Image (cartoon, rainbow, N blue to C red; front, side, top):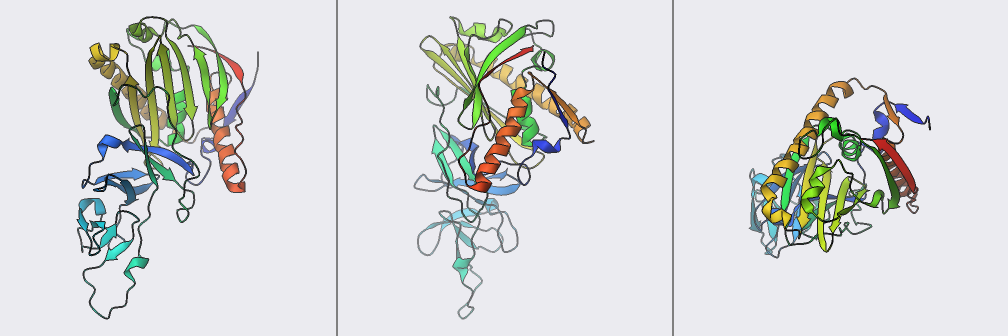
Length: 366
């Protein structure tokens, strides 16, 4: 039996700056959330952001602070500037900022002879891409060089049109603790006790094979455990693969014959102490037509239970205790730390990213 343990303060969970992973894509919204002319305020990596969609259908993301008197631009309106470009109008003094690049195109209070170069004023702009019905924001380490180094991730199993289920919640925690909780395989019998899923008395030894994946790792495709009752709703002989990818994406792809289910969980850091959780499920399985209300209630209950445990955990974390992480149940948490360090090193040194995860068999009881 291995005696490997890891101890240390909570600090090692954070890796760069405020502990956020940079030069990667984060989930921001569903494409259907953004309507032309409608402004959506959010927080992202500790910054206020206004999301929108222009008349041509292109999504944009700009810093939601007017540099004049700090009024939120999301409280303003979308107009056309003197050149006909779409712009955000500040509700305080009417300054205009083009939605295409964040450049100021007009300051109404200026009069002739006041030589301020208006176009030298510019809002921070986050690169935006849409893929598979989702809006992604690119978090550049250097905001003056925001050009993405890759495309947003794509997911096998996005089938059947729009998601069959969308649930949102905010956890009062840094994204690191939210991620570690998301990948923890041993808390189920204690946190998620319900008759239709499992009970604390139903625990079995598990043995799963893990493999490296792009910017992450996967629990290789396998038959679900016998004490996971919810899979029985799908009938047949389901097989599942669970994947994690930086910065905070976890998805489970279930195959039941020709039918598919994709359950994607996206963690997006709003601030250092708040993380948005978005749970999305796509499927072409008929169970999601007949049983959708029950699946929705179950998913919501799962998220609420995890959120309640985060709040309990915060009572201890505020004292900055040393944490003991054990093999094999906590190996995925250790991999997350190692992935963050390897990614930060590759960006700092401008070298290829080397995935530190190696194929292995992990064993635990849950």
